Length: 211
Image (cartoon, rainbow, N blue to C red; front, side, top):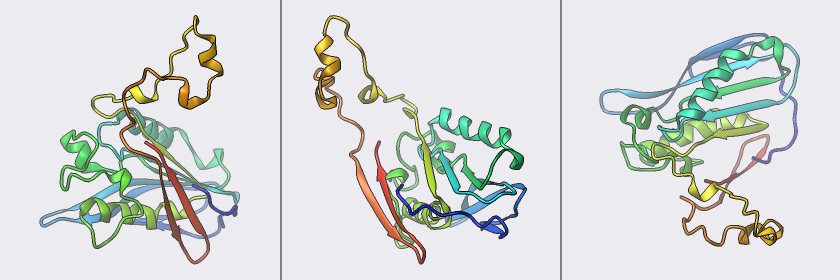
């Protein structure tokens, strides 16, 4: 995500969902992202604010519900980080797609069969996944100076397109352009690169999404 460099004002309250975070605190709560007929979908969110001013880092995991390593890494980050250890703000969403996590669904939200990760910046006029993406983007991502998505291979560990194997008897392979290093890899990546652009009153945002 490319955004203009800026400092976060650590003397203000940061509000996300039912969370009101202040400097020098670690606060957890929920952000309601979509309403269903009989219930709502809420995401767990933790905000850690240092006492000193600095940039804001947002970490999002669990956009695909079975990418457990990223989810666990986000949970461990929340547990290990304290306000005394940082300058600026850390915002962590350890599980961005609860419906997929609960149903152990590959790649998509089981409610509407839409890939949440490919739905940004989202829309309130769309299906559930588009509404979820809209709230994550507008309420959380736009607060970021830096944003990290934690991903894995999902339930079937579909990571073949991202593997690299050195072949000792083919030294020319290591010197070849990246597009030629694995001519024998016949598996296409699950989705192509794309750019998402958006604007707020203060900044322009450009996400390069790969996966």
